[in-house]
Structure formats: structure tokens, C-alpha cells
Length: 178
Image (cartoon, rainbow, N blue to C red; front, side, top):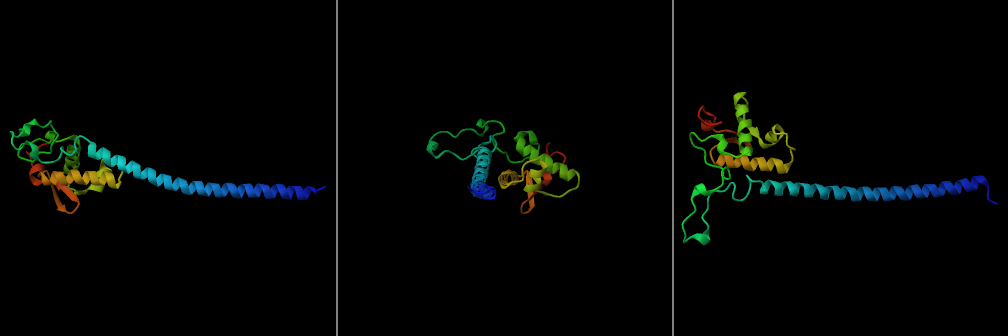
């Protein structure tokens, strides 16, 4: 008949083996979880990028200049006024109100106007994301950069240094619109 101490040692050894096996399984699951989390984050970023591209003010037609359809070369061109209101980013001109822009563009202009009023300098897109309460992640920052670059190209903003944006002098003036 086995001794009590021998039985206790057998149970202890079995328990230790079970703990070691569970630790190995936990390590394997932890590694698998890390890989799954990375994949999940990539899908979240991809979804955000698709959302940004498909947003009403960022669609393929939303911010492009009117380009005639080559298939309709023989027919009359569609008038520029046929676009939906606020679907295109207009060139800045004297007397044009900010209300002609989509909400996202107005928000950028308002943030930069506030900095100008406070005597502060230009903003980077990362700083804009933080001001707007957005996650400061590459997808959000690049979406803001794209919008800011469009505003520069259309005369609403200037870029005094690469990646730093401020209101154009004419836009910031008394009749620049608000």
C-alpha cells in the first residue's frame, strides 16, 4: 500500500503537469489573440478609410473639377449648376460665404479662423484632428490633410510651410465670408 506522502506527491505532480499544460495553452492563445487583434485593427482602419472615401463630401465626384465625359463628346455638356448643392468644393472668390462649403470644410476654416483671432500660427493636420476630438491616427490625419490640400488648391487656405495650414489672407479679411 502506497504511503500518504507518496500519494500527495503523485497528486502534486499531476496538478503541476496540468498547470504547465494550461500555461502553454494560455501562451498559445495569447499569441493567437495578438495576431487577431492586429488583423482586427487593420480592418478597422480599412473600414474608416472606406467611410472617408464614401462620405458625401469625399466621394470621387465630390472634390474633383468638372471633367467632360469622353463618351458624351458629341452631346451638349451638362451645366456646372447641375451638381447637387455643396457637392463640389468651389474656388474661393470675393463674397462667397463659407456656407457654400460642406460642414467638414467649414469646420476646418472655423478652427483656423479661431487660431488667427487668437494670434496663433498655422495648424498641422494632427493638431486639427486633436482640436476636432478625433482619434489622432494616420487615417484621420490623412483625411484632414486631403481636405486641407483641396482648400489650398481652391484658394481658401495657404500652406506657409509643408503640412501647416492657415486661412488665405483674402478669406481671413473682413469680407472673406463666415
